[in-house]
Amino acid sequence: MAALPPGSFFLGFDSSTQSLKATVLDSNLNVIQLDQIHFDSDLPHYKTKDGVYRDPSDSGRIVSPTLMWIEALDLVLQRLSKSGLDFGKVAALSGSGQQHGSVYWKNGTSSLLSSLDPNKPLLDQFRNAFSIGESPIWMDSSTTAQCREIEEAVGGAIELARITGSRGYERFTGPQIKKIFQKQPEVYNGTERISLVSSFMASIFAGKYASIDHADGAGMNLMDIEKRTWSKVALEATAPGLEEKLGPLAPAYAIVGSIASYFIERYKFNKDCLVVHWSGDNPNSLAGLTLSVPGDLGISLGTSDTVIGISSDPKPGLEGHVFPNPVDTKGYMVIPYMELVFDLEVRNSCAQSSWETFNKLLEQTPPLNGGKLGFYYKDHEILPPLPIGFHRYILQNFSGASLEGVKEQEVKEFDPPSEVSYPSERPVLPVSPTASTETDILFVQNNPKFQIRAIVEGQFLSMRGHAERFGMPVPPKRIIATGGASTNQSLLKSMASVFGCGVYTVQRPDSASLGAALRAAHGWICSKQGSFVPIADLYSDKLEKSSLSCKLSASPGSNEVASKYGVLMKKRMEIEKRLVEKLGRY
Image 1: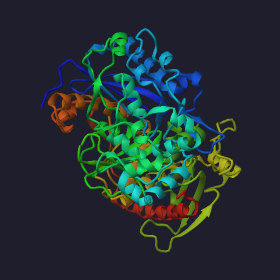
Image 2: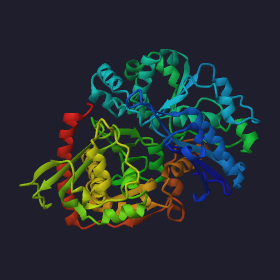
Image 3: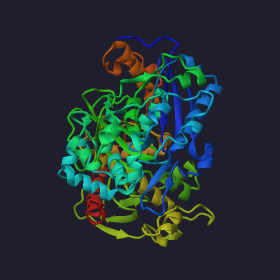
Image 4: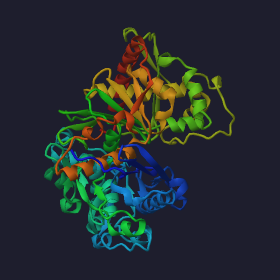
């Protein structure tokens, strides 16, 4: 196998919901430089909240300004340059994009990509490049009707899952495209290319339209995951002439081309720098966590809580998602669980925006929370597919040994409002007035310790339940945690207790940009070798000495406690099933 050239760098980006991160690896796979643009604070003129716009006139519509991502790219490159990064040593770059988000290039734009003026910033040159200025993103849940129409057209939800790896999901790109075709036909007809966030960013670096890669393409309800080609029946169910607008697919390790002259002249990149196809955030996290053994689970505690595993023979169904593995030409990655994060808002509301206070309140309550189960959904959820709302239950006669004799009682509050209180000026958790009552808001403010335990354990119990239902091993061999909240030791301790296994963390919680930098090195190796090379060959002899190494951060709890959590999980999944049957979108 070809070796990485000594002294060379590999640059990885993560264009996520709230920020654009950059990670630079050296030839020994150690992080040598990091930078980040936070959209809300660094680009305040876009007036986003958490990197997005929420449309009050269209329930569930959530978008981001496309130009914001372009301006962030120029800004992060400027910062890297000012901090001393020699772009001339970058042998290859790749990136991660928030999955499912889409960009719509205006007819006639391809010539712009290849003729950028290095004397002008990117923003000035792309102002009129898009047929729609606001990109639908993964948080959008406004396409339920389009999901059902696509499922019906291909023969049902199970058939769509069999073909594409997932049933119709509102956040997936296919239903978003169908909605634009139906509601804004002039936009669809005026679009010559539809990119994912990942291929959109790669296109800018390559100076030409980049293909959508197999792993990210599977998050669209449009790709045949077995053949790794566009599904004709799914395309026809979505919009006419769609395959031409999407362009060809490509393996994640393949090369888009050499870097565009714009970046050579403006930032002094080497003309031989390779642009490796970008992929989605979850595929890149899988790479950054070096998940390679069935039985390992990756859990991301970021903008969404996500469970990631690997499989050689997945069985797509009505729950979860199956994607081709971005670093294995035959394997798959599976996502049995994805839920929007509530912990951060609870921290801000109940714990005075302090993780220290949050942790103290969490640890004031015992494991299992006295049989209290809470279901908290501040946005329309992905898995489970439930609407906005809060639901609380107390299990009477619950000892943890079994569910025999256990009775559940639905309640409005777990404990009297006077149990714990903070000054009235603390921030109020923004919950929908259509989904919650004033009592809900008072409960969030006045019962923080029970609220926090119920939410934390609820998230982890749901993760465990959906992972087991999807066929993941019980208990996992180990969990590798990533994402911003993975630095919180109290959360990791709770996770280890619920799952009954050790929880490991990597050196850097931003595994998506780290994975992108690693994939840049992998793509460079595959290109020089002339064929696919297993990514483990890249780091097998240097893993523990590189930035890819991980350490045990939380030991498993006792088998007895894990067993009791298993019983509590069964009851939670029973209740969740009833909630989905009563309130779910499917």
